[in-house]
Length: 259
View 1 (cartoon, helix red, strand yellow):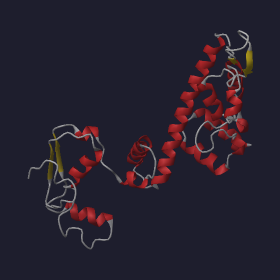
View 2 (tube, one colour):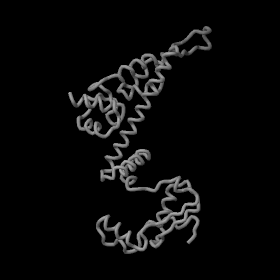
View 3 (cartoon, helix red, strand yellow):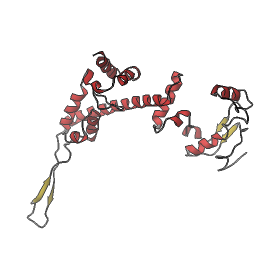
């Protein structure tokens, strides 16, 4: 059965055991719908079976144990089919979902999808925080080699004495870079305060806050980002101690819990 633009949605032929993808598409939904024409079990095979294991066994023993997809145009490399994790993941982004799926495959354990998603998100945010810290430290080092610049704006009356200002506006930024401000916010500094620092001041504050030890160590990511370990609930610290792969963070957590 050959079709162009049809047999994609609402067409039901359970006996379909082979799908030939001969048309390229940028639409993940279109690709999913096309493949879905072949993912239905044969009629009556799973009727009345209550458990997933019973249904899988019945499908495996049927005349259509699987569907074959022949992709001649690369759609399967461009798109990913929807899984149970996608359905249960809520508004999680694609990177966290992919990491959660890989985590479940490697562990082989049954876990709550949201817990795995949250773990993947924490790991991603940790890596992003570490990268942000590296960039901020590199920017701070470069800033020390440059002269600090201060900016003032003035409004001049063109009909008055030449060059006589009506008023002078104060600088709205102290000179800290956007990356420095963003990292200071991660360290718990109010954005307004961080924006008022010069590059040198921002670098000094970053160095000071980044060097906190033990209970004073500042979380760089996740829902407790910007908090000191002493202010984070112990159950979360215990979970992070066992599940987050970061030697420095785990060391500070061990010291905190030990105290």
